[in-house]
Length: 158
Image (cartoon, rainbow, N blue to C red; front, side, top):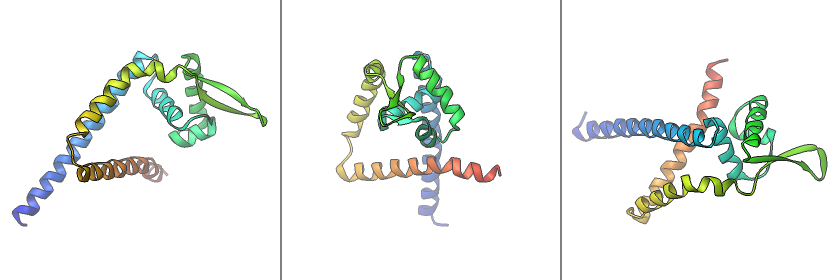
């Protein structure tokens, strides 16, 4: 094996290790944030999905989180109790209930996330347009891979 191949394998191993550390730090960060808002981490990230995607049914949230509808009902109950979401009847089908964020939810969370978004934008400014394209592609591929893990896990446990 050439020296170039060895260095490449070492760099790939380093990136895998860095991604593992980044994942750990992200999970720990969101645990601290969730605790500050009186939530658990899963509730907090489910709220993020509702903020991002907008009003949805419990079934849609279950699909987006890959959690059971029973687990999602508990999440919605806790988010509603904490004042972040509310249940609203579908005006066209009173049997259907949507979950939506309450108007001040994003404002309540902004003091935590706005500085992080600004810092992230600031360090991304240091990269060229070509590098940003690679970084965006890499991030998209990491997200796709992470989404595939539950499917892989489900297949292994059957």
